[in-house]
Amino acid sequence: MQSRWWAPLFLLTPLPAAAADDSPQDLSTLSIEELAQLPVRSASKREEPLSRVPNAAWVITNDDIVRSPATSIPELLREAPGVQVQRLNATQYAVSARGFGGYEPSNKLLLLVDGRSGYSTLHSGVFWDLRSPLLEDIAQIEVINGPGGTLYGPNAVNGVINILSKDAFDAQGGLIRGTAGARERTLGARYGFALGSDAAVRVYGNYYDREDMPDRAAAGIADDAIRGWQAGFRADVHGAADSFTLQGDLFDSDRFFAPGDGNHGHNILGRWNHELTGSSSLRFQAYYDYFQRRELLTVNSLETVDAELQYNLASGGHELVAGVGGRTTRDSFVNRFNAFRLDPESARLWIGNAFVQDRLALSRTLSLTAGVKLESSSYTGVQLLPNLRLAWQAGERALLWASVARAVRTPSRIDRDLTEPATVARASQFASEKLTAFEAGYRGQPSASTSLSVSLFYNLYHDLRSLTFIGNPFPLQLGNDLRGTTYGVEAAVTRQLTPWWRVTGTAAWLGKDFELRPGTIDLSAGASLGQDPDYQFGLRSRMTLPQGVLFDAGLRAVDGLDSPAIDGYVEADARLSLRLSDAVELYVAGENLLHARHLESNDVARAQWIQRSVYAGTRLRF
Image 1 (spheres, one colour):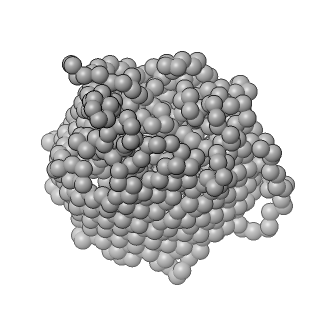
Image 2 (cartoon, rainbow, N blue to C red; image 1 turned 90 degrees about the horizontal axis):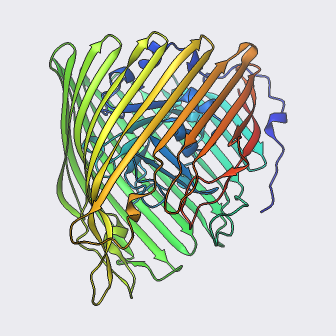
């Protein structure tokens, strides 16, 4: 596939203008103490400082995003400790936490984008090629490693990734960003404006063009390039006791595996917040989401309607959150590539839930969080998803916590309805995969210039997917015959070496031990368990130098994979930026700088050699 070049925007002369209202906020100027107070919402569905969160939590800030060489959401997630990112090819990623890595096995991580679920009813995973927002308009990405079923329901098994976009009031004025390199070109634009003193709107568009990976490891892949765009808007109204948000997106992309391949879709979301008193509030959110994916003679579409009402109360020593919600989906999967089918080809599914969680202050330094979600779906009866957390503020700068929680992955359409006329029978009794998770952790500041977080986990899994032999008339059927444990540790340390230089190190180690139920077999050889590195390390340096010069560099080391075996790898990325003013920024960046190519996945059907990438770009604000 030949390169498609357009005039690099970094050669443009910017229009003379005053600095925009959203001139880049350099969080690297914040102290370690101030960074510990960054507000996080995902852990308890209410805003609280990161230092108080009794979870394995990590925040990728807007400053992290705009200073990163990454041009996609999965690449940004490499910064979070314990999150495993495998790039399969130019188009596809597999993102997981605490095991189950791989394109198909990575089905236990929940993605939220401004409250919209990225869950796929087809296979319970996330299609990352459907998510291409304007990165500059992301306020922050909150990563919770560990179960979140009490608050978020199915698929929040091993973690929750919550992408939060900027309020329209925080994205005023104009922005243009462009990059150009041998492997990729991007172009993004946004304009935000106020409607009086109480309302604001922003509109955006984002274009990307990613070349195929030419040295193909996977047999039969003709072209893995992708070219597409996403556009949308967000409107916010703030009143004395009420606030309202309305936002929507639409997207379209072309892929080149086979003629006609590509994605398109749209969504719209409304959210209303009402302050009842100074200590209680109501929140109502509803959205509609639709997408269609065409890939290698298959067509997969999903339509989702979702609504949730939430109540928050802070009274005495209690911090209560409770809510009810409902979701209906209609999906379709048409396969002309081979003989596998879903029976029925299209289905409507329903999910209803109610949840309550309370954080009780047992003393000035000790708190207990207890909660439970009751959920019922078209494929399951009522399921209980409880959690219990104990947090001890051991000092002014130290939090110790421990928890036990239950989470489930409810059956997907493939789990229940996959069939092949000669070999595979529908598994109409396929049950939810179940997790009981034990966690403990520390978050604190050993010194004024150092922050440290460490989490340990021990996960017990039951009823994991297997492939069994059942005999006449169909030889094979999906079952729930695998079980076992994962265990490990995740850590991150940040050190402010000087006022202008900050360094962060991350590490994760994972152990696994799985087995079959006695008297059963798994003809898939544990395919649902995925392929995971035993360890991964990261080191990131961030320098804010005089004269508007910013230099950021990262190094990561990832262990190899088995069956089939591929080597581990060490790679680096870097970004050098010159901010001529609040309105003009020029930069050069590179990813995978140490080697011309490397493999990150051993998926023989999809994995390509990942190439080195270097590009130049600009951001103009007006």
